[in-house]
Length: 301
Image (tube, one colour):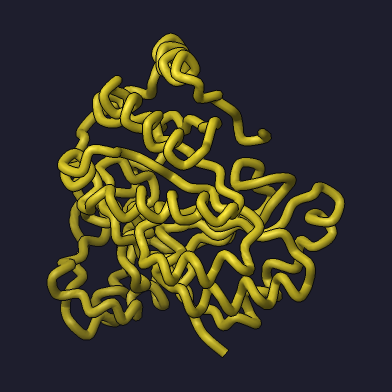
């Protein structure tokens, strides 16, 4: 039985596929998108998130850390990340969860058992289990075993992916997946490398292969002001969608709900300040797509 690292299990999800779903978030991502709203998902290993406002000043974490990587600052615990060995001992002794472990190891059996607690909801809403991240394709053997086990239970499955994995991985997982939610961000290769840290070619090539084989795919584009929302990217996106025989797209407007996590992980939020796109701007983007024959849909379509 395989094991994987999961950093969140979200129940009663309405935006990750049909019906009411349980979304399981896999740790690890090959991308480093400037606007990432789950920065705790990028590192493939369990890590420590600081919640300094909870600190009681008891110093238990200092005594527990074998590397001397923790100290108490004016605003609570501070971690010297270069010294931290990710042993997580500090999180085990903190009485207030001011230092919190992000990421837990599950076996296939444990994760499926956790997901099936919501079986009644799946059966009555047309829902199921969705796998997100991070990038779930970074743990392919574990994901495949979980998918196969859920399919034996006749549970609807969705993979939310950037498509940035070898085609052999996608092809193997497709046999056990009812729907791919496929996030396509930037088509221009240079811009993709700048803003996501990885080439766009793999994602585009894999999307073409999925659609050529008639596999169920729903493409989604994050609308990131001044990064993905310009007309050059929109027109390039239209071209790719048409080459794939796709006439629909879901827009995912940027939000800033996850930006506070960056300081808790001692990471830089590279965009600085971004405004959420206004409804007027979203209407313009929708119009640009629809004039070129691409229908903009919502998560229920």
